Length: 425
Image (cartoon, rainbow, N blue to C red):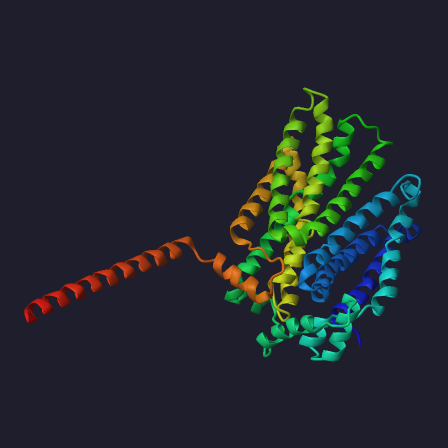
């Protein structure tokens, strides 16, 4: 019997296949509503995938490579974007008469996943914490890690099992009411909101216009656009290679910080591009730099953190909260950006720069480093982070007051003892 996340991913492919068929045959049927319905169903598939896949990866990952394996989600998303750009070239499916076939290509990765996923091992954490099947968990660990001695990994998971032995799967409401996880939840909400509000979708909206402004012809732009997909893949792979060395915190905060910098430079270039021709080419460099900055940190690390912050019983609710915030903010950007662009013109990117700056500032003060840390260590780090400065100063003041009182008490005792000795003499 398949465990829930594998079963969820398998069944989710049904949505992708149905959506692809609806969109691919909409032209043949002459029904425009089939495209709308297909895109709606495809949105359901994407929402489920971005919750179930990172959760499955977090459960099968040992803590030494937890971040690198978690970045696989971001890397494969970038590969998917690049594949879509290649398939959209005029020589393949980029012609008006060929777009139904482009939609139909969605079936291919779905069929591959349905063929491969049943043969992958079940989650060892699920087997230990939910089914209490130690032998099956050991076998799964051995398959994933490629070694026979997995006693350390089993003991690490069993330690978590002892802590949450009597805990049941938490609902979203129960997790939101858990005061001990308040800062973890807030951090997930902020990172997922900034994941969409950082303006990457706006960059994709503006890319062709900036390329045209730089003097590139419409025939060349589809091939130049491939550079954006290539930069995405390289940056995501780089992040996956260094995340276990540098940690989550520097990459995430640094990624948002670099996006702020390049958004400001891009705004200046777009505003003054009529003054100098070279500013138009600098705009292209800024676009590539913004995309790379996003993929280095904000593009994948929020999903890694969501899996690291919470126990096994709380993880489903946490990923549901993250997914809701993610897609709500995506919907908001898609709905509001045309009005922002119309009202602010070339200054529209400053809105996203402010969002990135706000996210980086919050994470700088709140987010602890989670690299190679257990759940208990991460909870302790959050507990230290969330103590207000005033309370700390008050504690220090009280400690100083107590020490002064003790010194005064010792001094008075010494004087009283001296007077008593004098009287005796």
